Length: 120
Image (cartoon, rainbow, N blue to C red):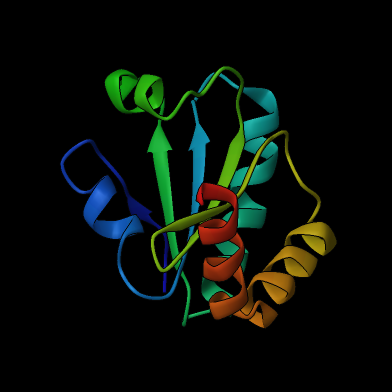
């Protein structure tokens, strides 16, 4: 599956779906973003079971602000609507693949139990 454009209108609905969603916050003028873009796109083609979305921080300034984006590229990973990863900086392909593997292996029941324990 190719990457999808995420906007203020479809962001929440997309990340709250069951399954895994990777989100790349980027801008056209950002050199590291242009380096990371093809890596992100390639991963989206290799992992059809994962949603890959991109947020153009210039076109989606309100969404970027709500997400607390202070530098780009920033990668966020959601699974079943839960934010699991939020980090600025371009990742090399092997690091992105490693992250994909780790997110797939997570036991979400344990993650939810840990969140409940922290909130309780």
